[in-house]
Structure formats: structure tokens, C-alpha cells
Image 1: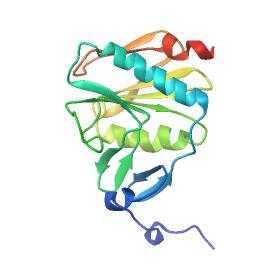
Image 2 (image 1 turned 90 degrees about the vertical axis):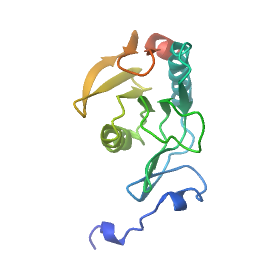
Image 3 (image 1 turned 180 degrees about the vertical axis):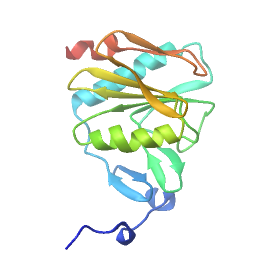
Image 4 (image 1 turned 60 degrees about the horizontal axis):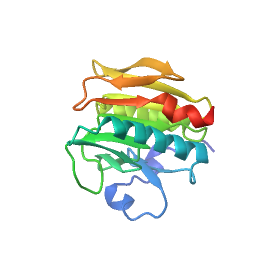
Length: 182
């Protein structure tokens, strides 16, 4: 027997998604189970990156950093970024418009989804910056949207990075994010 053809797979929507138990993402109507609770390093690095980003936004009243919040791109596509910087939205059940930037913490089980599938989704949605953080390597890959395509700006093992052309001034101090794991 060959592989199952896509036309035989059920296609789900947001109305289905909101009733599911557990942690899921929905991409073009296909349900993806999220891995069990991430390892300690993953969680700590996500929190430290979010903290550093939030600290840089002290003067900005229109933007905020959220973690593990659903981002509804379409009725059949809902993802849950590890960290997102959103502007102009004060409430809601999910992120309603393209975040200014998104951070995903990459694990062996999420690598393909983060590096390929979500990369393409966020690029299409015109998320200005996409940051992939690798806990095992203590490295950040930063991509910026240039003429509607992501271009790699830099790989960082240390130092800080200031994000340009955002609604608010924002930066991440990667020394702070990675220091306790070196």
C-alpha cells in the first residue's frame, strides 16, 4: 500500500480546534500534536528571551510580549509561537494580526515544523522578524523580512540584537538569555 493521499485525510477548522483537549496546532486543515511539555532548558530560554524583550519595551504602551498564545492565520491554520511581540491588540482569545516578531525554541521534535513549515507561514504573513533559538547550541538565528522574503541577518551565540523598523524599540540580550546554560 502507498502513502495516504491528502484527500483522504480529514481537514479541520478553528471550530474543531477549540474543542480539542491537549496541545495542538492546525496548519492548512491538518492537525499537529505538540510535543509533551518541553525540557527545562527550552522553557527557561523561552522565559528569559521573553523577559529580555519585555524589558526593552518599557516605554512602549502599544506593544506587548506574549507566550504560548494561539495565532490564528486563517480558519484552517492556528499555530502557537513560543514568544510573540504583538502591537495594537489589548485583548482576545488569540493573536489576530501579524506579530512584529516571533521566537520559536527549536527542539529535535519541532525542527522541521519550526524551520520549514512555520518559517513559510510567518514569511507569508509578513512577520517582520523570525528568531529560531537552539537550546542545545545556545545559538539564535535571526531572519528579517526583506522584500517579502526572509533573509538571514545573523547567527548569534552572544551579545544583543536591536530590531529595527518595529512599532516600538525592541532588543534581546542573548548573553542574558544563554548565560546560565554556558
